[in-house]
Picture 1 (cartoon, rainbow, N blue to C red):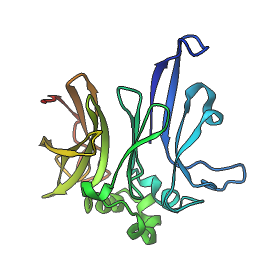
Picture 2: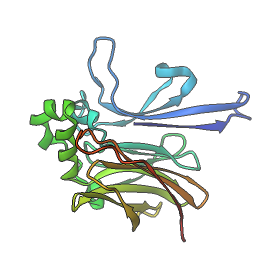
Picture 3: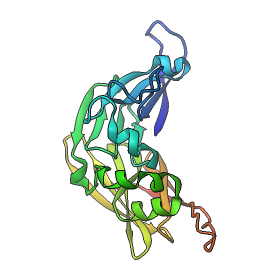
Picture 4: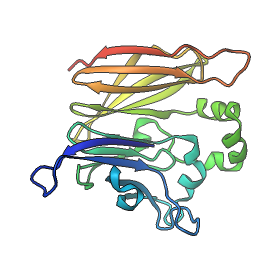
Length: 235
């Protein structure tokens, strides 16, 4: 998972704008070892590539970042810049929601379990082979739990979009995280047409654009047409 943004470099000894990249995931060293120091979150300028990335978040499992290495392929986490240049990382495969300043200093944390998220991938490790190669097996596994689909850069803090399956259809709630540590909830007034539905979105001011996508691999059911939903964020 990754996100990027630009920032003004005037007054810093450089001209123009700098484009920053935030990445959630482990990197391999020259010997092919996955996350040898346990780093799973990174920040750096795009133009410098891998060499410019510096570690921000380390796995709770230590060197090797076992959970990310085994389960990261399922796409349970998310990363997003906020309007002020701060950013949020949600590993998804291990506990924690982390909000950093624009300089990479940790500002706030939340327990992901407080949002109803199952943040350990241990139950899936024995079936990792089937989950990684069979989209139907993966879809059934994801449908049995709440997962993070998106982080929205709301004006007053991150909006974490959580997907849950009920009656064979996807539905979503948004947890609005604030700097004082409080969380408020909003049920989104639309649903997916199947268990395959995922949600993405972006924000401009108080307007939110949601994109509902259903990438079914079931040949007996055609893909649903993507839907664009425009919403206004109320105070």
